[in-house]
Image (tube, rainbow, N blue to C red):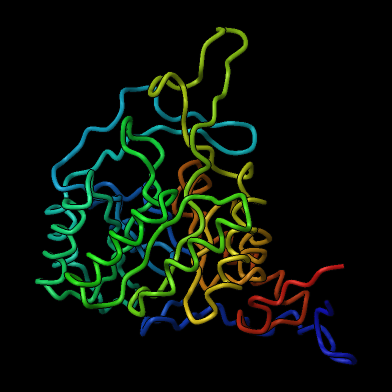
Length: 326
């Protein structure tokens, strides 16, 4: 695929690059923001994200009641990413709805509230209260947490996903999104896309959550690196990038009238570019944010701008979804 039109020179070094995104009635100055679960459990962390170069903010996935999460150690950095089994530690949905009430929407950074009830009834209770408050934030319903013992991932049960979505659209009339687990077979892309396209108010899908139930071994100590679930945890970071890109492209192809939020393996502007090239509207950052802090947003945005300039792209729309094949 050519990077610019025939005869078109690369953009001049000083040419302004536009990273802004308009989607779902929202405006973002940058396509980058945090993945739910990273630096977003407490109000001070959310405030730090809002004050950073992130284009939006999303809360920790909330349950009906506060949760301490799984026992430590439950996170470990790896050479090419991370493994975690956090177990949905959060302050309970009332905490995040209270934050959403006082959030300064006028600063131009959209707020998303991640919802992950321990049951369908919990999820519906949270969304019902969010609907009643009628705030200008959008929910991302987590169908894909792999790290709670005894709680299966709804996103791998297509009938259960459809039943939950049926109930959600009855109680929550506004736009919402879902966060999906990684899929590994084209048949499963088809099956979940068939489920999702039946709901017009489902505006976005986030691809992907961590690759669940990985096991990393400390050879010296002859132990698993993390404690919960006998050492099983969600794999994140660069390890998951190829899987994340495949899911982004396949859902972007199958759901052309919805938005795909890319998530997984973003450590530089190059990976953000890849997600958008595969069809992502915006991009979430997880492991890299956890390790580097909010300064990652400014760095990655600068690298993305430099890469776009070198290829002759002024805007994200100029290359979004235009991945070619040899």
